[in-house]
Length: 102
Image (cartoon, rainbow, N blue to C red; front, side, top):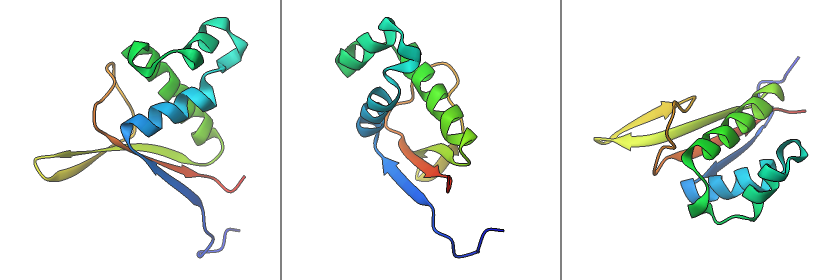
């Protein structure tokens, strides 16, 4: 049983830092040479679809380990949270990763 005051690791990243995290953590995805090219490419040359694939892989990985990955954006002075990305990479979101105790 978890204690109520048990601490979890939480990391917040801006868009650029989150992309760097995705490349470093998941750029070697499945040992594929295509993914290794992503790790060596400039962030500007990586397609929005590839960013979404990396995000989905990270989301599954973090969720499987008991954590969460949420994006936040400010729209008309209202903070909106998103637990997924549809088709295009969102610009200027902040990302919050909460890791499980595993």
